[in-house]
Length: 182
Image 1: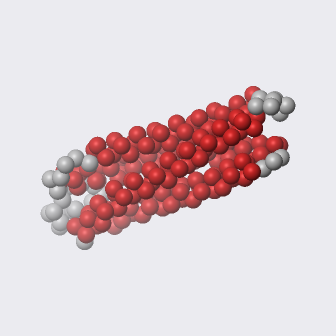
Image 2: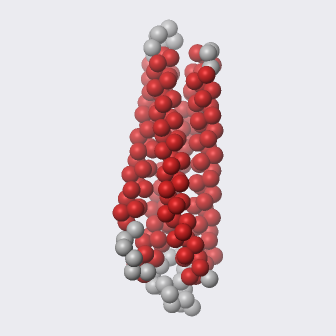
Image 3: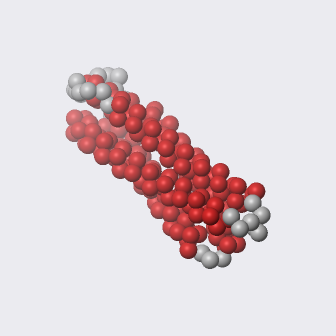
């Protein structure tokens, strides 16, 4: 990638094998960390569903709600980081290899991010409605709670699928780039 490696244009960043390895490591670690967090969220969501004690279920919903807010912030940060550090490298590599553009695939990945965020935001809105605006005596709470959890499951499942698709697209390219850099 640097001047000692003429297979890549000098504009392709990062400038070295080590730097690119760090980008790849961070990408993989963030996916694994967020994937583990989703697993924890879905496990707690299941506990809310099977819990017959409404007060305990609502208390757990409050914890889940805060965790989803943090996950959404981390997902947003990760998405910006990918756009600035991962996708430009892959696009330049595709360009250099004279392959069709990777931009349409990246666009699909970005739409998936939007879908995940919509599901999580709907969960957050419903959770707030239940926790803040609905009296405990309201007989609609169990139904609202189930719907709320459905959106959490949908967001979590969609995020897992997104990671799998993204990794299926990116990992093979990463291996090619690393091989060419080596």
